[in-house]
Amino acid sequence: MNTAEEQDRLLREPRIALERARRDQATWADLAYRGQGTDDGRLTDRNRAARFAVLWALQYDRRPHDLPLLRFLLQQQTMYYREAVPSGLAPDLTLAGFLVAEHRQVEDLWLHWAAKNLSFDTALGYHLYHLLTAGIAASTEMVRTSSRPDRDRILGDITSARHTDAAVDEWLDQQRVRFPANPADEGLKAWARHAKRLGEREASRQFMTEWAAGEPRTATTLNTLQFHLAHLGYLTEAVDVQIEAVALSDSWPGAKTSKLLTLARLQRRTGDFAGACQTLQEVQRVLPSDKHGFEQGNWRHFVKECFLLVPIAPAASAARRLLAASEQDLRGIPRLWMDGVLDAALAAAEHVGDPQALHRYGVLQQAAARERTQEVGQTARPSESGPTTT
Image 1: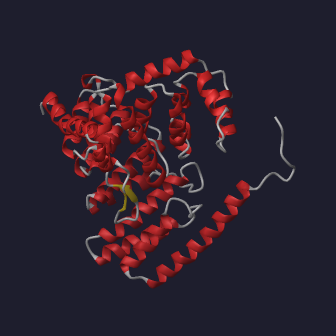
Image 2 (image 1 turned 120 degrees about the horizontal axis):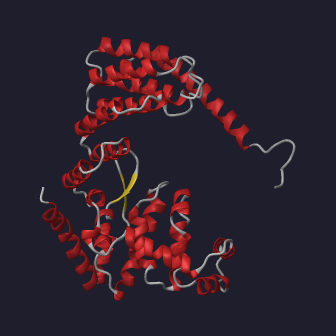
Image 3 (image 1 turned 90 degrees about the vertical axis):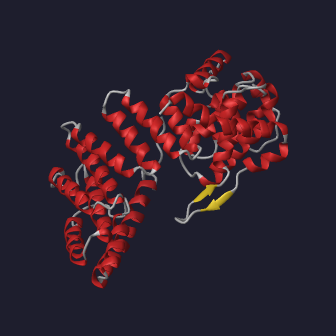
């Protein structure tokens, strides 16, 4: 791959889309949030890639008169997160927020507050300094004189610590490094992720593979590469990377178990029944016999993977044997209401056509639901001795 040529190609359409948006505000409708359901019941946004393309082009071509467009993009990105992203925070939202914040207009404080208060992850990850780039005094006064019902909450956030304008300026400089104005200053890993957001799977794969080739073959590098390839749908390549990661596993059993479970999951997704079975046998060899100990979560994930393999067994007899073995391994594992293990068991029993197993797993699921209610209730219940003060 000629990296420079591929980068120029990727930016060509976003730049054209940006110029179109600058010329004709009517085209902004094509960048607005448009929710649509997926086959697996999720909600997505059919204009997300188009919106990100314009946002990305704006990162490299910043002009004062683009502020209304940037505000619109931040509003739409916030709506997308509110409607379709229950958790998590990606650079598509933080880039939109930064490009608006860079204009340092006090009235944009409300846009940033809306973006920050979408979820637990945005509350933590969308920095409070987005709200303060017009100056702490001006921002505080804007909130203090407003009639918004959340005024006191916002004031509490922006006055609870000794924020300074110098600290805000330093944060802005850090964001300029994170989101450079020159495409040449972006690393290959960033290009891979940009290409993915644009729906350019093959370009994304090539950028990430080239990035990894220049990095030490550490667990971190391999995990990043594997996850990216798998998310793009290059499962066979992801399996090869994960095999290498397993070989590099340290001596701590829990680390190797987790990597083996990831490998088995990838092998199952490629339809490699024999390979996944072999990997799960290795998992069982390294798991401790104590199912209630530190690795109880890995025990649940192990049995879940065994149940999930049942539908891809090459023969009905193999499926029945695997179902029976999985049920044996299920015994004694605590907190079966976690990690979807009983959902996998029910699906496996239904695939085999075993009504007795379906009944047993249904009874287990009801008991697990009661256990979950009791355990969660105990955690949430306040102490009988009353609240303590610190």
